[in-house]
Length: 83
Ligand SMILES: [Zn+2]
Image 1 (cartoon, rainbow, N blue to C red):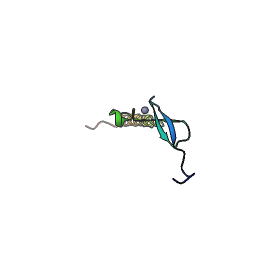
Image 2: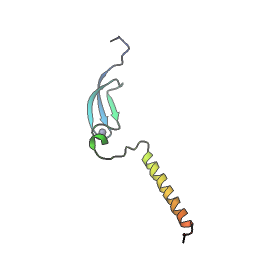
Image 3: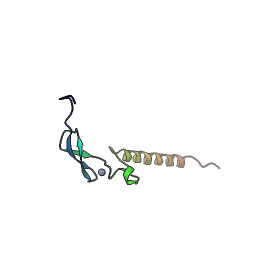
Image 4: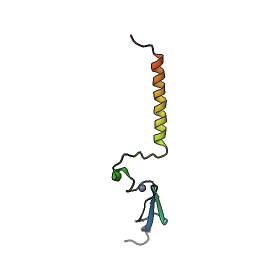
């Protein structure tokens, strides 16, 4: 290895938002890594369907969907019934 070009690779403690922790090695600067998702809670490993909501995107979509449905119902009610 060439000297002084490689980042420091050291032990870190990884802590996930789900509460699980594990030790790993990383070039991350600092003693602790904070994660949003890990192998304990990721749907690929759990086999359960789970929405990973980042920045409230799912919530925003649900609101948009509700508004659209309301508009469609209004339009359907305003239209005279075809006989
Ligand atoms: Zn996790």
